[in-house]
Image 1 (cartoon, rainbow, N blue to C red):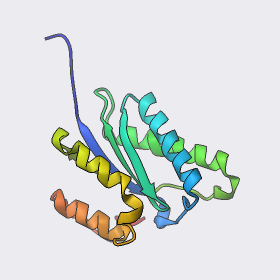
Image 2 (cartoon, rainbow, N blue to C red):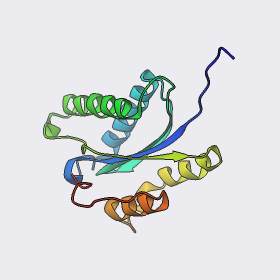
Image 3 (cartoon, rainbow, N blue to C red):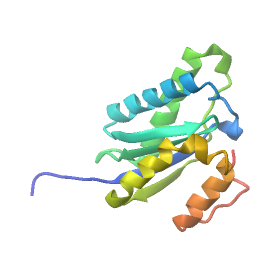
Length: 151
């Protein structure tokens, strides 16, 4: 078969540097999410849902066939960080954390994860980002070293 096909769903989670609440402004946060959609499309990793709160982002996308995950995240963070600083000079100190969580998602779980991402504001009234990230890592069988995960 000469055609190569892939459908790999990925749930990405990453925070602002030191979990600073840089994205408090809801309207600006929505613009950031929209910009992330554009970056994903340009990198041939179409997003299905992007959401989050003032200190982190959840992104559900289909990973492109020709791009490695770490390259995708490097470009996504770099380009969005640059754009954020251009759009809001008051956020000149903005940075994303160095690391990230990347979790593979079954197509049968896409709908539930989409709802989960949509409900981030309600969700984070009950659970901190750190507790959420610990829970996600446990759910997917990943151990974390807390000395290094919270930059």
